[in-house]
Image 1 (cartoon, rainbow, N blue to C red):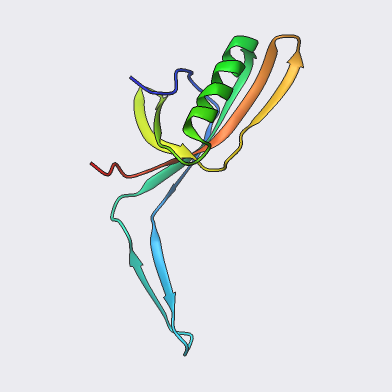
Image 2: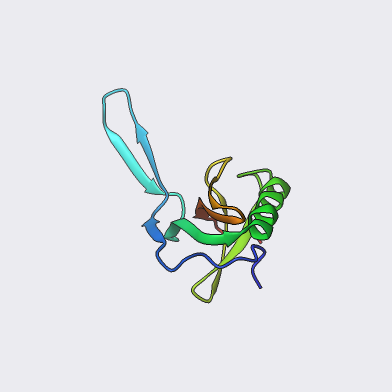
Length: 113
């Protein structure tokens, strides 16, 4: 079961990427190598028309993770994905009394265990 208790909207964006280390030498020659053979995904997750209770819980969750410091899992279409907040912030928008939109960028990480 995911640490983050709320399911994102279906219209999220995702970007797969490989973690490539680029070393540029004094003569401008580049050497490239993969830091990890695993392709990692990043997500732009949105949550629309959510309650005051949910946005308060998300703020508390964000504070407990200290922004991008600590990893957690999010359930994305039935898969628990381990990752972290990309930035040390997330956006929220008040639409009406007790109705909010919010979102954040989420970066998959490799499990260290």
